[in-house]
Image (cartoon, rainbow, N blue to C red; front, side, top):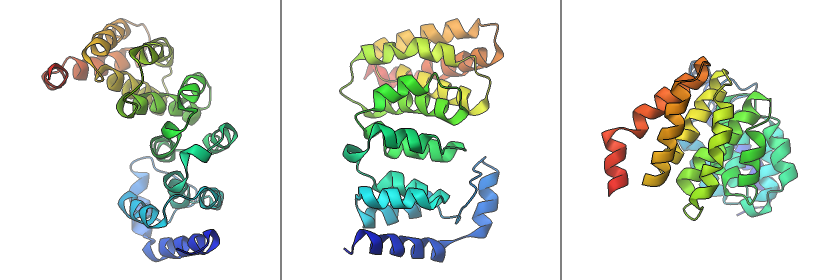
Length: 230
């Protein structure tokens, strides 16, 4: 294991070797539109991150490089315990497409001590991908935070209702994701998420109706019922 600086140079070298211009074109079809990109796949980035290990200073250097791959790697190698609220605010302000938002929230932000606070704060922000981040954090907490009480997720329901009227594609999809994941956590939250979904289906706002209708399909499905009844 070399110094942080040596690891940084090694990682940049690997990314340049793995660079695939053809993959960059393909990403655009999935609305992955970074300004700077090597075209390296997520599985390859996970391999690099695993080899590197956790290094907060390295993460900051990689983020500042500003490429899709270096920013995703930054979220993979950073130490959640060393992440400050200020850093989270700085990084979230750089989100300008859905993939970096989701990767950063899943790999890093959800594991910090500020995840609940930011889920609530960001879900009410105006910026599209900051707002999406709030709901992605809710979705990830529902899956990954095994110790959280039901009340935490019940408090998210009014924010989900408010967010459902935002017609922007990447916001409403994250709102829907949060609602579905909370409703799959346990039978009681499933019942309450279904109530919220049914309420949204009667909304006079098209995006809210879509969020409710789509969530209802999964939350009332046989597959979800079987899993919750086990």
